[in-house]
Length: 281
Image 1 (cartoon, rainbow, N blue to C red):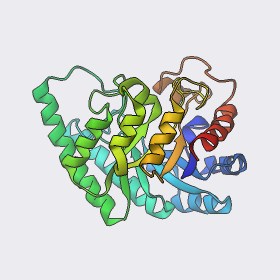
Image 2: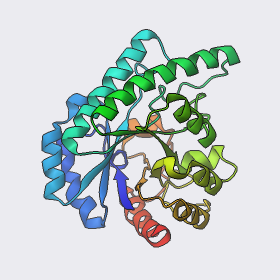
Image 3: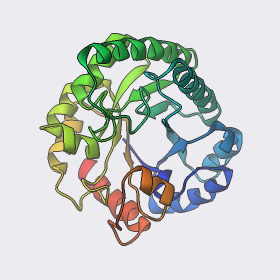
């Protein structure tokens, strides 16, 4: 099990210049870095890989940033734009030696409304077809895609572990796996540990987030039960802290962070990592 940090806690967008954070992340004790690539033109993957190597880190995951124009259930143009964006990211992952594309790869974040059953069924079929195409691209490059259910305020499409597993089954690709996040599960799952056990071997990525997007461990999430569940399924993937603060204003606005949840960004990373290593290892 590796412990990682999502760079949104400190910067947006991530660029070649952002690699200056790697020295600090390594000093704090992180193993892997999760990079949200907001636009593929923002980075030179070869440069980022050199900096990772120089600091003894790996890019464990790349996060798909699904804006309004990137939507696998949207208009034909939005679908095409979303597919092209994620296929380009997967190509960059080869140079980064990164195994996983993660996040809500199926839809634009923030698209949440009451959808009639017939329309939802049509959207489902559209996403299945698009994910089959995306998974073929990933399979050919030896990469995996980890689909993340989001809470009801951020999507109306896939909110729960069960829905995520249903999509994985429908797509039928060995490249498509599940990504669970304690913040979203805290809203949508009746029992986070039970969801982890149900995901089993299909769980390939895990976000360890405070219930309020603050420091893992300084919240009301049942971390001991989660640790037991992860151990019971033999989870070997990355455990990544994904938190947001008002310091990175564009992300704070997108994630509805309207107040300072913790004293500093550093505290979320340092204290969170210590807690997770103590609890999950």
